Image 1 (tube, one colour):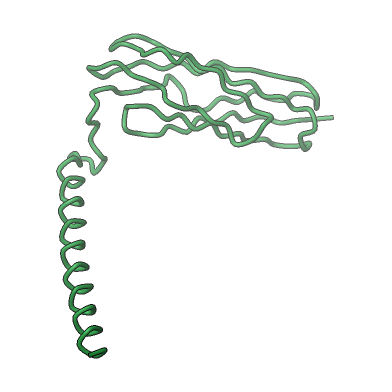
Image 2 (cartoon, helix red, strand yellow):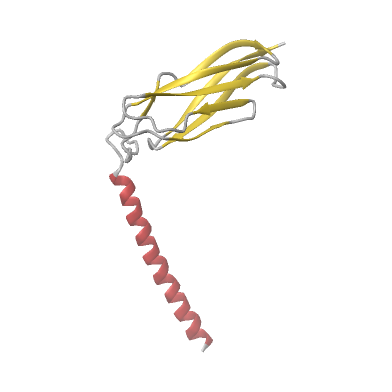
Length: 148
């Protein structure tokens, strides 16, 4: 009796696993259909984000000083662009951005502040991740050197 039960259970698990793998295969086909000729995942929302610059070097500042920079972007897509999240790698870097949609052809901006208080002397590189409905994550960089 126990052998039959475990045999039946094994067959049921095997059938379920096969049908589950088939569903996963089909899900992967959807992704393949949305890859463009460059090998990038195509944007399904119609919004596109293009920054005028993705790196900024603030030069040398004395430890304890604060600097800020505005990263500008344009929605080059055909639908409104929505910035969903902007995060910095550490608490010394603070991004500020407008949460309103940016219509096609319009500009937007992300202001990033950097406070060097308590930071190590030397070269600094801070990363800011920008997530939006454009289907891509953009990483901005704020670089510079902290001196005595």
